[in-house]
Image (cartoon, rainbow, N blue to C red; front, top):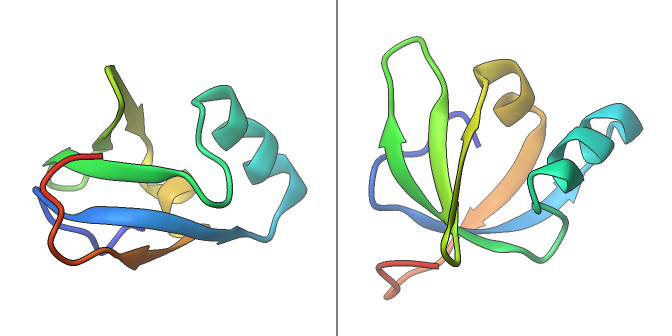
Amino acid sequence: MSELRKGDVVIVKSIQNDLVRAQAIRFGIAEGALVSVEEVLHSGPIVLRRGLMRYALGRNLARQIQVEKVKGQKHA
Protein backbone atom coordinates (compact mmCIF):
# COMPACT_ATOMS: atom_id res chain seq x y z
CA MET A 1 0.00 0.00 0.00
CA SER A 2 2.93 2.35 0.58
CA GLU A 3 3.57 2.63 -3.20
CA LEU A 4 0.20 4.20 -4.00
CA ARG A 5 -0.49 7.59 -5.50
CA LYS A 6 -3.15 10.19 -4.89
CA GLY A 7 -6.37 9.21 -6.65
CA ASP A 8 -5.69 5.47 -6.69
CA VAL A 9 -8.56 3.21 -5.70
CA VAL A 10 -7.60 -0.15 -4.26
CA ILE A 11 -9.06 -3.24 -2.70
CA VAL A 12 -7.29 -4.68 0.33
CA LYS A 13 -6.07 -8.18 -0.59
CA SER A 14 -4.28 -9.33 2.55
CA ILE A 15 -2.84 -8.30 5.87
CA GLN A 16 -0.44 -11.03 6.99
CA ASN A 17 0.58 -9.78 10.41
CA ASP A 18 -2.11 -10.22 13.11
CA LEU A 19 -1.06 -7.08 14.98
CA VAL A 20 -1.16 -4.99 11.79
CA ARG A 21 -4.54 -6.53 10.92
CA ALA A 22 -5.90 -5.50 14.33
CA GLN A 23 -4.60 -1.95 13.85
CA ALA A 24 -6.06 -1.71 10.36
CA ILE A 25 -9.45 -3.00 11.50
CA ARG A 26 -9.59 -0.13 14.00
CA PHE A 27 -9.50 2.13 10.94
CA GLY A 28 -12.22 0.09 9.24
CA ILE A 29 -9.75 -1.48 6.84
CA ALA A 30 -9.87 -5.25 6.39
CA GLU A 31 -9.42 -7.72 3.56
CA GLY A 32 -11.93 -6.91 0.83
CA ALA A 33 -12.30 -3.23 1.79
CA LEU A 34 -12.38 -0.74 -1.08
CA VAL A 35 -10.45 2.47 -0.27
CA SER A 36 -9.25 5.50 -2.20
CA VAL A 37 -6.03 7.43 -1.70
CA GLU A 38 -6.76 11.05 -0.78
CA GLU A 39 -3.19 12.20 -0.21
CA VAL A 40 0.33 10.81 -0.04
CA LEU A 41 2.63 12.95 2.08
CA HIS A 42 6.34 12.74 1.31
CA SER A 43 7.91 10.49 3.97
CA GLY A 44 4.69 10.79 5.93
CA PRO A 45 1.33 9.11 6.24
CA ILE A 46 -1.02 8.04 3.47
CA VAL A 47 -4.48 9.53 3.78
CA LEU A 48 -7.20 7.08 2.76
CA ARG A 49 -10.91 7.45 2.35
CA ARG A 50 -13.45 4.73 2.80
CA GLY A 51 -17.01 5.93 2.40
CA LEU A 52 -17.34 9.18 4.33
CA MET A 53 -14.40 8.46 6.66
CA ARG A 54 -10.79 9.49 6.13
CA TYR A 55 -7.81 7.84 7.82
CA ALA A 56 -4.11 8.61 7.95
CA LEU A 57 -1.98 5.46 7.96
CA GLY A 58 1.70 5.57 8.80
CA ARG A 59 4.11 4.24 6.19
CA ASN A 60 5.16 1.29 8.32
CA LEU A 61 1.57 0.15 8.69
CA ALA A 62 0.82 0.79 5.02
CA ARG A 63 3.84 -1.28 3.91
CA GLN A 64 2.35 -4.35 5.52
CA ILE A 65 -1.00 -4.16 3.76
CA GLN A 66 -1.19 -5.78 0.31
CA VAL A 67 -3.63 -4.15 -2.10
CA GLU A 68 -4.67 -4.35 -5.73
CA LYS A 69 -5.50 -1.28 -7.80
CA VAL A 70 -9.03 -1.05 -9.11
CA LYS A 71 -9.28 0.49 -12.56
CA GLY A 72 -12.09 2.77 -13.57
CA GLN A 73 -13.13 4.02 -10.12
CA LYS A 74 -12.41 7.46 -8.75
CA HIS A 75 -13.53 7.08 -5.12
CA ALA A 76 -14.27 4.24 -2.75
